[in-house]
Amino acid sequence: MRPPRFHLLGFGVLFVVATLLHATLSPRSTLWGPVLVHADRHATVVALTFDDGPNEPYTSRILDILKARGVKATFFVVGVNARTFPDAVRREAAEGHEIGNHTFTHPYLIGEGGRTMLWQIDETERTLQELAGVTPHWFRPPHGFRDPRLFPKARRMDLEVVEWSNMPRDWTRPGADVIVERTLARLKPGDIILLHDGASTWHGGDRGQTVEALPRILDGIEKRGLRPVTLSELARAPGAKGYRNYVDDREPADLRDCE
Image 1: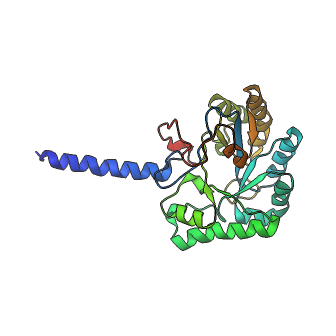
Image 2 (image 1 turned 30 degrees about the vertical axis):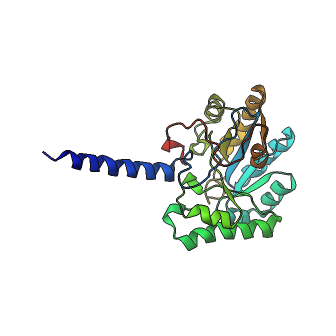
Image 3 (image 1 turned 90 degrees about the horizontal axis):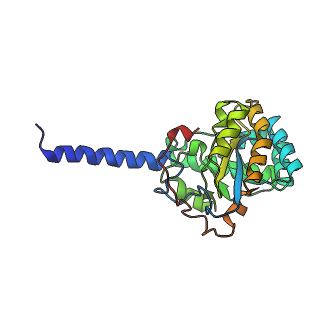
């Protein structure tokens, strides 16, 4: 029979490993650095965000819907996709949407070296400046995964790291009805809603279900007395305490939410 100290040591190791995994994989963890997950829960706004684009024709269809509804959103752009569909990026900027940095090739950053990680961010910054004249304020790591190396690099480039609090997993293509139901069932004031207009670097990845769901999601947001805004507007919402450590109702990590 092993002495009790060995059992305690084993539990200690497991605790440390679990803590580090949670900090790396959970969108709600702020252990490695400050992360915007949602706004003040008394806010009357939510942020609508789209990842992995541009990806035509779906990005343009989403832009058409947003324009018709007078809604501004935040698009987290993958650099290589921006070079493939530059007109879509220019349209996002021209129509008043916010553009965020989502790396150049959508890798798992925790598996990259420090120089490669910096290149992924910096090359996307250069691409967005060149194509649309915009310098992003927000950075969302692909799959939501990050480690301690990311935050100093983001600060050097004046980028704030953002995750999400509401993701209907539209990237699994469960059907437009399911996307709508999942989004609205968990909707809370101050939410950051994560949808997808792209599919990593797969050009032409089908996002038709997201396009179909979007008008009903917007209807549901409005019926709840909330207003969809960009991330920067969300961070300035009345009652907000700044966008560092907004997490005031932490829930257990759900790794299924890490696309």
